[in-house]
Image (cartoon, rainbow, N blue to C red; front, side, top):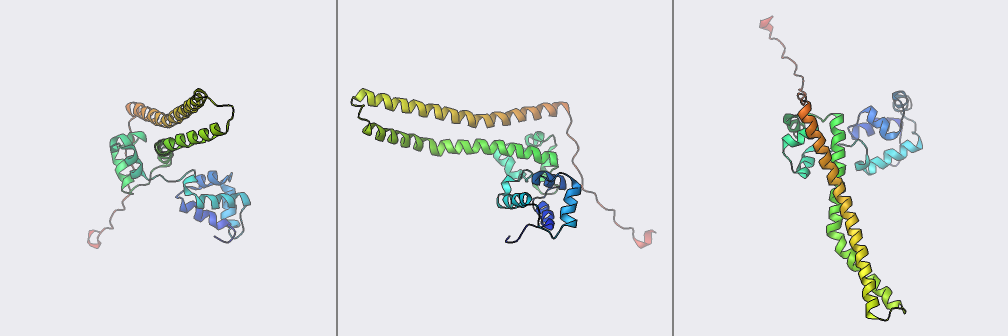
Length: 227
């Protein structure tokens, strides 16, 4: 968009993310509904505050950073590799609710979306770290060792083979510690996800899940002969 962000654009921004007014307020740092109404309606054709405009453009460029973004429920369940019953338990819901979400028949409630984002963030953290370890660690170790060898070649004080081997051993020990730190970080996200699953399991045993929401169906108009 090559024009200023106007007040009316905030309504389109809210609708684009499928957010409520309250969520848009929180995401853009607008403190009251009254202020939102003034910006969107009374000042609809006026440029918004610069900080708000920056946030709108930032979220538009990086939708994944929107704090109340929608998580694709079928994809999330696939990544967790669990059945609908276990997935429903994560959200304090019944299996039929999961079926409704995955068929796009019912939009998940705000509290369900919050849990989905938490689980999604934990999974992303674990997946990113696991991928980094799988693809990057061996290469980084070789690069560090090569760099260390170059340093040793330029160090006039190291003339004995024992000194060179000791320096290389120290480099390898440091790499081993770095790998362990990365592994600890990646398992922490997985541990937190398992902890949340345990919490959900406990609550499921104590509190029955609510019945799924049903769409209201309008009764068919009575035929003329029935009057």
